[in-house]
Length: 98
Image (cartoon, rainbow, N blue to C red; front, side, top):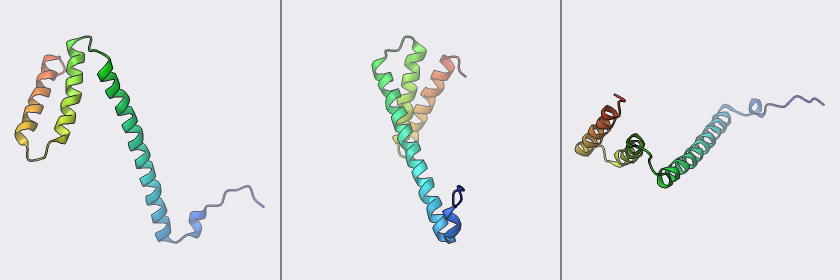
């Protein structure tokens, strides 16, 4: 008897190995998405409960909300996308970021 772990993938066919790899990759992506949603919820709770102490902090909150809004816009809504982009550019310019 050996203490060496047995690589069970060696005993499977190529299709089974690929299927296992896909399941593992999918599980990892789902876990990453779950963690991302949890961090996003923490951030949004902070944005809701902690008042901005300065204009740059208020602009950072507005940038976050504008990016959420822009992500929900349909691709053909170029006018609203351009308005969001112009406003984000204004924030960067006025905040000394650009």
